[in-house]
Image (cartoon, one colour):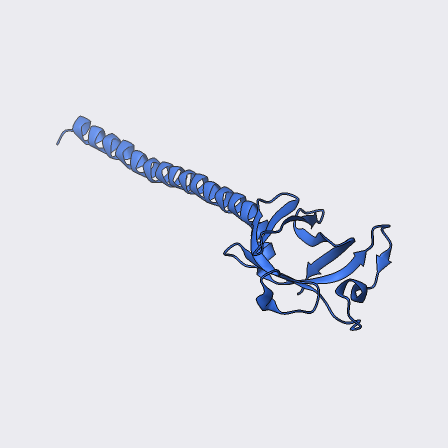
Length: 168
């Protein structure tokens, strides 16, 4: 083999070797960029989905207990006054179910009377539309903390505003 052919072959090998080294690095960089773009999309979707469903999930994650009440003059009153009972430790309850139903008790009574349960609709705003089994419709207000999560619920009951907190 002549010296000229030998150098061409050697130069061809160097060029071919350099191309092989650059190609995998370029492929790896492109693959990493694609993975990062996909991961960013997935993370964005998860965050968006958790924010849009977090309020409703929070309603159903646990029960709610009454913690205070105010009369029409906005004076705080004992909860037993609202419940028409001498039991000072009695707590009203409010439970939201994932299927869109709720149960609500403020006065001692039978859960079979049909007036303490019904259906609700909450769209993530500041109110929950409530329809009791007997057809009575009302709105409960949502109290949100600074981070936007639900920290309480208030409702009008007779001439009182009753406040509920999570029963954690």
